[in-house]
Amino acid sequence: MPAASTEAPMLVGAASPSRPVSDSRMAPGGPGYRRMSFALFLAGVATFALLYSTQALLPLISGEFGVAASDASWTVSAATGALALFVLPMSALSERFGRRTLMTASLAVAVTVGLLVPFAPSLGTLIALRAVQGAALAGLPASATAYLAEEVRPKALITAIGLFVAGNSVGGMSGRVITGWVAQEWGWRAAVAVIGVVAVGCAVAFRLLLPAPKHFRKGSLRPKVLVRTVRTHLANPLLRRLYAIGALFMTVFGGVYTVIGYRLTEAPFSLPQGVVGSIFLVYLVGTVSASTAGKLVARLGRRGALYLAGGTTTSGLLLSLSDTLALVLLGLVLITAGFFAGHAVASSAVSHTAKEGRAQASALYQSAYYLGSSVGSAVGAVAFHAGGWSGTVGVGLLAVLGVVGITVMGSRAARGARVAAAA
Image (cartoon, rainbow, N blue to C red; front, side, top):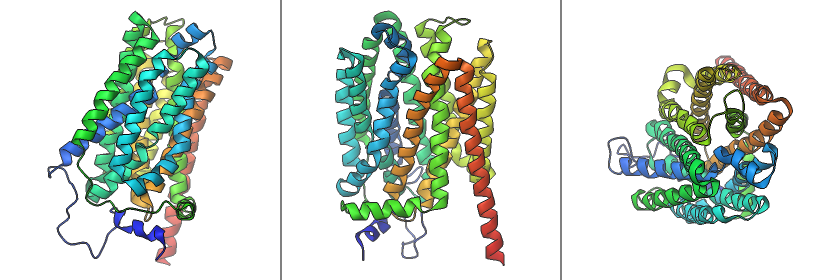
């Protein structure tokens, strides 16, 4: 049997006729579930807090180094771009050395670099450190979803992944709020230092709380096996659509939140840095929408949930064009809710769809997702420089149109499959 087939025991999303009636995997209310949920929640917090630690501080970084928004935005794009490049190789390492081991090592390296970031003497050095940090964080997303797919019962999988994504939203929110207020008093270097210390605490708690895996089976590190598995996933039309949807949703989100600080610190709003940082409290909406993604799919179906997420995001983008602060904030709320719901639905669908090599399937999704973030941050900043906020919104609307178009293609493909099956 080829080495790729040894991953079959990890595919807990698929029904297995040989599985005993008593399922030893974790479920809500069962042993270890709360510890596992909280541990991965903290990992999500640390990941997003570190990954986007400079995003709310870009106007200050621009001021210190004397650069434009499009240049300063690379402190975000370098981190997310490196994560996108390294997530697939990291997922392969997790197949060999284990999910928990790789997640622990990744967090350890990322928080160490995070403690060095405040001392960057130049923009180039800062961008380089952020790239290393992003590459280290690549060990978290795919390994976390693979761990959940192996250790959590299928019916609880969407909810469990939603909680991990909720941790992302809390990390993104708290990181930006904390950095905003700290930077207002002591500067951006002190702000990223505080985030580094918070991430250290999250990393330690994560390692102490996460239960040891019981269903992990070592896979192969042979390149041929990895290439064959990746080709299999990329040949699956549904997985390709899900990867594109994740990338497009993140293009919107990355562009909006990279540029929003510049817009709110300029006229007609002219808000101080601390208040701008507090704007990111709207991430709490994402925490709710991500954690309830399972209920949304149960009620509307996967494609229905994606249509709703796309419509919500579009409404938010259009509202954000207003020069009234209250409407801009409402727009950010809707963008955030739509994004996190769409992300949770798409990422959980990848875990459910992949029948072999689930870690690589999740890694490809994460790669597309963070590539979308990197592109969104860079293109959104360029669009803002060229056409103001309306330019950034235009980029976001095009991305959402892509999400809707891909979902329509999926609906037609599913309808055609049903007709063929009935014939």
